[in-house]
Image (cartoon, rainbow, N blue to C red; front, side):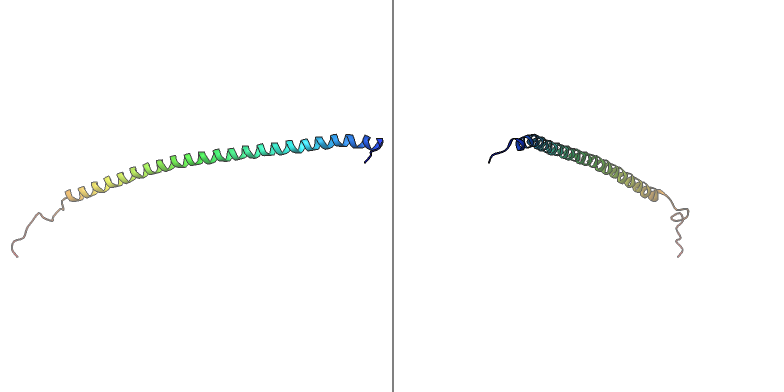
Length: 99
């Protein structure tokens, strides 16, 4: 396969152009890969933070729940104690033996 001088004048610059295009495609794929990796890392970090915040929230909620239950228990005990200590105005003050 012999090439003429005119064909070489056209072919050689096109190979340089093709090489540049191939290099750009390769760089573009490397850049998109890096962007995808960065997005994945951001998503992973966001997930980690949400799990930590969720754990903190659940611990706070459980502590608040314990405090609320303790408060309710104390109120209930206080009401029961008051009910036992309260004397009725006329019950138990007079005993009728006539009957």
